[in-house]
Image 1 (cartoon, rainbow, N blue to C red):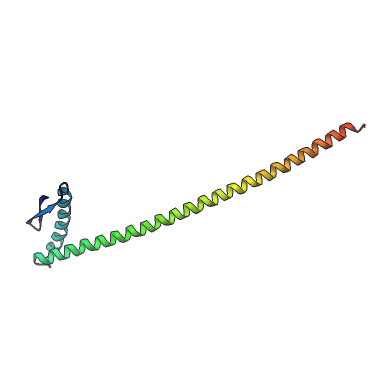
Image 2 (cartoon, rainbow, N blue to C red):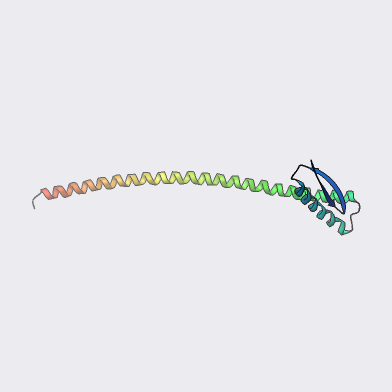
Length: 128
């Protein structure tokens, strides 16, 4: 185990952690220290326990709010994926429909061409 010394509200605390997590633990402690100092600087909160409690509650509130936003974003992403999938299905259906219509038009043009060629050939045979 690794150990890092963090300072919150002017007090040093040794914290055990996994090797490589020291910087992360230090950053978390700095964040907590900022919150503790905010409450301390109001002059209305006294005592480390209450300062730490209020700072922890504030951090927990921020975490809950962030988790809520994350869940909302995940739902939006799922909704966009469903819309994308639906749009692709509709696109493929429209392409298939267009291909079918083009095939029908091509058949009709072919029949008309054959009729016109038949009439031209008949007219060529009939003496004028």
